[in-house]
Image (cartoon, rainbow over all chains, first blue to last red; front, side, top):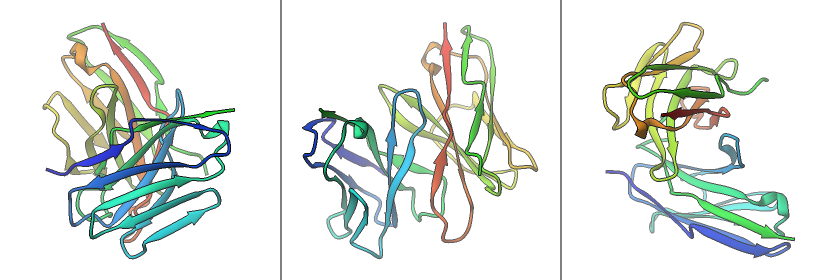
Length: 114
Length: 114
């Protein structure tokens, strides 16, 4: 079945440093890759996504890269701030992106130390 | 626009009881998906509804069911509750355009089964 692997499970960085979270997926038909941030007591918040027709997408301090050949994608956060501390999830759709069924990675707990 | 809303936010039930959770999607969104989040299993897809029809179903027992109303609001029901059903239940909505993949989550309903 479909599978999304996410690494690392925990990540601790100093404020101002960069953080990188990596994911691999198994379904070759997947064409959409979102990243979610979940803070304590809240639902996952969509922070950035990428489609299979591009290799990189940036939004201020956040960027996502995609390597379709290797079936992996990564989240990059630069100049980290304490408010970036949260659990981050990658996901891939079951088949095409036009579906509500997302397969999630196990999550990465990011701690940014002031 | 208001975000996805879920009620109630917290529930405590006893083993063997049943429970109904409610979700109101973002205005104009017609697709609603439900997920279960637990520390051990992470985020797992339950089902997706569009135009009052179930489009996708995850790997959960038949005790888990859902429905969608004509105004796109959705409910999920869990019958004969088990201790293992304790989890955060999340609802997410999508716009359901052919190229609109973004899915937005509500805050969740925290269900505790004792």
